[in-house]
Amino acid sequence: MTPSSKAHSASLFSQANVMNHPFRLLQAAVVVAVLPFASEAAGLANLVNNGDFEVLELDEFDTPVVNDYGNAEPASWFFKETTPAQTATPAVQLIGDDDADGDGVHSYALNFYEVSVGGFSFPGEADIRSQAIEVIAGEELTWSFSYKLLGVDQGQGDEFRADLRFFEDLSATDTSSTGSAFIFEDVFYSSEATVPDGEWQTLTRQFTVPYDSPEPGDDSRPAAGTTVYADVRFSINAFTSFGGGQVRFDDITVTRPVSADYNGDGVVDAADYTVWRDTQGSETDLTADGTGDGVIDIADYNRWAVEYGSTVAPSTSMAIPEPASLVATTLALLLAGSTMADPRRRS
Image (cartoon, rainbow, N blue to C red; front, side, top):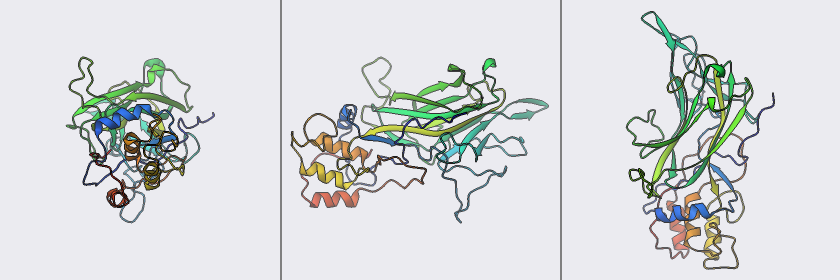
């Protein structure tokens, strides 16, 4: 069996979030207007925390947390919990010797297990979901994951379900999405394609974050440019029939293009703002033309603000830093002579 390669070679645990600023960094509608035109993107920023499960949950002594089954758990993921008293088989399980692409050692599994109540046995539900991420209504995203089926009888209709879900409000630390103003979801069922048992597969899908458009039935969705929240969820027996076996997941990504690395050093930061500032209005030096419209203008600044903190270069697994604050940076830029008067937004 040959493990599949990563769907995106530029996957990173970074978020293009600009937090804790007293003013909004950009007009929401302008952001959505410029995002689709960045066809010359330099790379991709992965918005999913710990999508390859290499970062483990640690206690106050920096020791991996071990559950009742003796298994460690990945950080930034929530899961269906069971105990040995309920079932000998854990609903979810960190696998330590099977990585989809060999760039790490972990994958995460949903297991078939049975629940006994009143003398009757039936399949139990199992699910995992990622920590919530911030996205922008109307922007184009690509989501991808690798999966492997072990002992699953697809001929009997056994399948798992994968969802990219969107909410109006969802905290990164919420363990449940109940009451979080669900908006929409993009759904994949494994029965859509029969795959060989025991071989890693990679699925990639593109999706537009739902927004209020002139189409019928869309008026209840957020306005274009609004910050909304997303997570990735995998489940068995909650919405599907899964009669036995195990499904493993790895290399989960939700990516957006990155085009504001104006100085080409692999990270979108204050140095890229300097490139933009020094070439404002130019139609000949297009180094900071993040939107590809042939002129250096406010749209290219907005692109930089959305992507601030994103890393472009490929990376191996790493812990995810807290979103960086732009307060000090922005003050310094203003003092340096910026004449920006545009309202600013957090992305």
